[in-house]
Image (cartoon, rainbow, N blue to C red; front, side):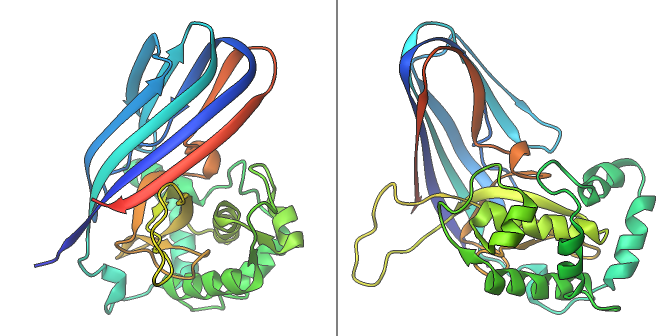
Length: 296
């Protein structure tokens, strides 16, 4: 009987403003999804100051979103999301024996999808704002996809090369850093590597989607676990016929399992930003983020 891991995730976002803010409208994407291997147990939000308007809905990609408006004067905003999830330790289909279809055949079949398949799979083969087609990246990707190789095998090879060729360097890029800049600098963070991976796969006609979430991190041997020292994470999923969506984490060069917590999916980061919004007021803002992932 497969076991499960239970995790508690606390994600705090704070904004400190240099002047008074009269109004803000915000959209959150912090509620973990249910997946074939993950079940959401609880999720709740606390917001200070208390908003006058609050609601929720499910977006086009099936992500649960919270919306709220603070309609009175304030100088700071604190949004705290608390979740608990259960993740099965059962073997994933891609961990055993399976038929890995040639990537050319899979790519050739995607434009012909219709109905729900076109919406749920085919749309993820198209470029997005953060994953535009780049000729240099297409050539880089094709080096991992010789004729006849399977989709899974090609993705594993490309994941390993991204992990090897690009340096993980926090602070070296920003949210809006483009594919060409990442290629030139050969460094970045998980969001950048996910965008690079996605753009390359889409450039050769495969369907792939962005995944935002969290990763359980363990302290060095003999060291205490530090609360609030975790961070949000990003990886991708590729559609492989016969396996459905298969995850790949280029930052860590592995296929995610029971330590990766899925929050949301989209075409790229800008579909699943944890918190975004607009405000009416003057002055500047200072952002703070604190994430804690622990066994429940």
